[in-house]
Image (cartoon, rainbow over all chains, first blue to last red; front, side, top):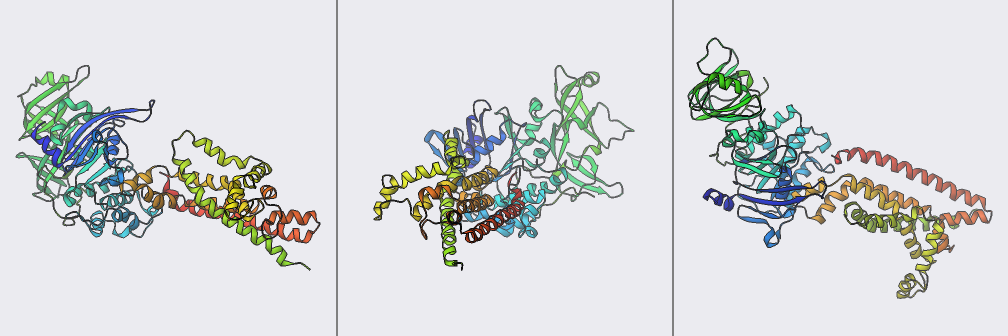
Length: 402
Length: 231
């Protein structure tokens, strides 16, 4: 065990579960261990049916599998010693896929349900009712019945209800997947603001790599009930060998860039990526701000010479670092170093052969500006993210519908 | 002239019997319904069948066995002995016991259905919000099952009011003690007192209609309010 892992065991979330869930016919075997720090968003990512939701339910105590679980050095489960805390004794906040508000209670009473039961001992800097209500923008809904809310409002109330139960860790089980696209965009900024506003670690289950790329700092990759890899999000996204799990078609990397300026005439936003300019359709971000940008592998092309007379706005000089050809298919995945960061480009094997690409080849990465959709850009929240108090900053939406 | 005191006695007795029976049934029927809705036990359906038995059993058969159970030779007689009596048969208490068995399925089934309808999710949510199992039952399960509890209470009450065969077997016809409405109507018809029979029968007809109507209206209103409860 490395020192970092040992530290995570002491100060973070340390989980290991192994066993079978369900009956013999529809049963499901899970064998996963992972650690997560007590800050930031850790995504549990994998395809539907891979066991990520079961894993989350085990952490909440809703399902029981042999194993152990400690959070911040406090043992919640240690089957070897016969120790098991039932769900209501675990300080988790759980946001389900459907908001699952109590239909017989008003919004305010839903919010207070967990708060009342969590006890009065205040965790240092635990947010107040008013803080949470303001953070989630639900103050105008308090007297309503859950049935009178929209899908997005419901999910925000469910989130507030979980947060008010004074959790040590927030568990979110595909909280966006039951919502339509527009509503997702409405809610994502609130999610993004959470770690900074509350200093609360989040385990976020999702099968949408776009969502994960936008929100997570770390990722645990899961397939068929087993862990495939875990680590910082950027590093895992750059690993070409994980393509089958991170999704070939949607695969891509996340890079950090700084906002250099806006062009109001052409409605473009200029970013700076490792000293090179990058343009995308106008986004609502402040000049000088650090942002994270998701660039999909299939949106990137490579040229061995700087092309001229081309509509592609973005031409970034770089060097090929790695090429993985996918046997029996037309495709090859490449990793290109650009100003200290890495892009992925999905090419055909034919193109790789024709251009004579090998690791070390200097290339120009071409990216269409229109390839960046509204979800690609989000506020930067790197590893060194600082905890700060609630309410200092409303969740800002970096890209709004014009 | 009509003697209204004579007519009022069976009405009051019937209302008392139905009220006490309904309360007893809500208290013991709700845990049974909860167990039937949640348990994984393989005895579950056997217990459910026993609860439902009065639906198909001729009331006289049920009454016959109850008579034996409540009589001096049965456990009922033993219990009566504790209070200085000889038997629970032909007493108001005996009628309550008989009615509880007789009306049990009408109370347990709607409550069980209500418990099953909202599924595990609300209870899981409550658990992650620090509610203990007992707390979850009171703060989530019971409020969500309210339409079922109401239906069960109304059906149990109405069914007890209409009870005849069982009471005939275990209660007889003691004015003020076991002479309930249905027995009184039967008695008046037997003795050709048609006016009195008409008053009581007509009253029961209107009562039954109002009960069913109220229940349907309540059901619709509550169903709308709690419409979100099922995911």
